[in-house]
Image: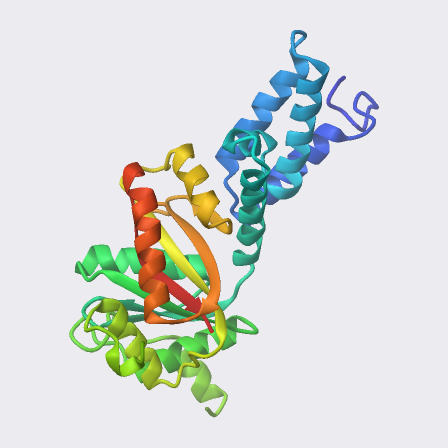
Length: 192
Length: 108
């Protein structure tokens, strides 16, 4: 089979769909490296004259799942033949998709009692927690995260959090924030 | 355990601050727990072991200078006993693989 849907050497456009799917994942920030690596391995399996029909079918299914969901069938199989393990992997994938769509603000609590307030999704809050922990040696203990309806509301939430913790204090106050939140001005603009 | 009896430690301090801001400890929440590993990525065996106790997990790749981590979630009311026991259980499970669970989070 060729790779050109326009010239009818790939009339189903399979390869084109794969490329579009990979680009979509890149834009969404998925684990592109491992996904592309998996796709390459699966294409090799399909092309391998020594591979069984079952192996080729599984490889083809893996490609489809990689592109559409980011879940790799080989990964699921590697986790074990137990059904529970397979379900766990798929549920993990479902959680991943939920977490990436979040808009909100957060307060990270550190062992000293200081906080760090920020805007972003829950993954961002954990990255901030580890960064502040590394910079200040103040261990990240817990996170409070609140969803917001849009980016502006998330900035305003961040500002309210920061005000409640005494404002930015360059590490000397009750929090680890160093700069004021853009949400402060937004709140003023909105008469809040 | 009543709030006035929360131990004087990092988790107890966080809960006290949340209680001071009228956090509702009677409602169930999705509680996130994070596992950090000495070496990234964690071995498959670690994830297989984690799956047996905590099915709802995902791995986050390193982001810049921040190391990768595994996050799993538990739906429950937030209590000192719960956050401490889950962190302890996850740490015991992951210690053979160089993993430790020492932070948590809640969406509210």
